[in-house]
Image (tube, rainbow, N blue to C red; front, top):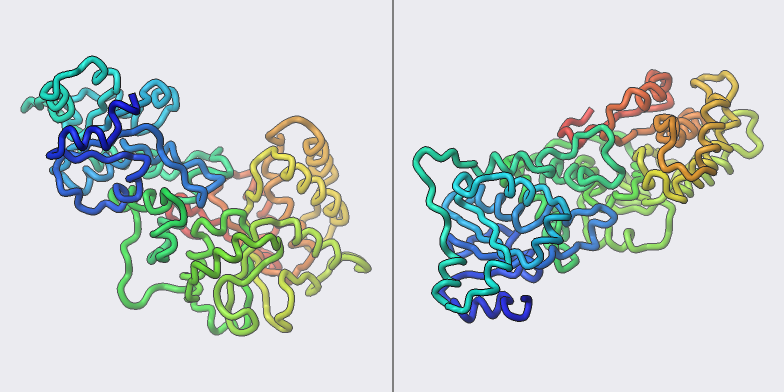
Length: 441
């Protein structure tokens, strides 16, 4: 089938029609530029992947049906035919846009149709094949047609994954910064791979009317210049998916994509500066792995009777530069080996803070539970709130002077409850950032 009905073969057979191969023309289609036709025929074998968005799985949200719904939302005269070369595999994959289309009557969606490869196999006449490729069902006057934008807003990307049990690598991790950024860098728009999924997701949000419009002139920042020499240190395994860029925008720091990419591919785990001058004024530092911070906390506590107040430094050099920790709650895939190993190491160090003190102490029960889970075959701990809040609570105990800002889309009471005793304290500045709800606390 692929040999007989490739995009090139169809284009040569029908030069007056417009064909696109979704695998090779992905970026061209998702740029949403005029196509030069009111009928686009997209040949779909596979959706090309984008290594720049790993480990988030985005292919299921960016099928040609997602593109067609977004494109028709922006161009009301456009009609799209998707020629599906692998219908069985695609039906089993559970793609949301395709599943939605299969529940609709064709006359209710006159702007989009799916053509299965099986329908072409027995056709040898060119006129019959042309008719099959180009003829849309007639819509009656009393038929209720679906507006493309309404369909688009019902898809998962537009819903932004608001489920309370959203996985660590949910699509919201990519959608969040796209909703917040006013100006995407050229690197984010152009992408580094064959398929730019971040730009495609942005186009979905734009077509749905959910992405922020580009501001002209001044833009809102956090007005941190008066703070003097301060290093904002972001610890997030997905900082490169737009979160660091958004923070630099909010901190009014210029963003250099090539500089950030050099940090991303570096093997160094400890924080590196991606925006601003390292030793003067406000700067932004990032790290994709948290193991180093536990090592520094342990060293800072050596020889101390209780805590290491003013003794925990997140970065090297800088002299008198202040530091503010920006910490993501979910740093590893849940239940992974590294997740369990790291949790066990935190629990061991946290036993230092089981007695009454200025902050709510850890309990033996919760630490025992973490250690039992870390040595078990279970993926999800019984006390998820305990596990997710172990690191920020430990760091708050370690250095009472360290400001900590927590980033999370969760509204779980068990997590908020674990932190409630810390929020009024002067040692912790914790903001739960519900970016998937387009709200920033």
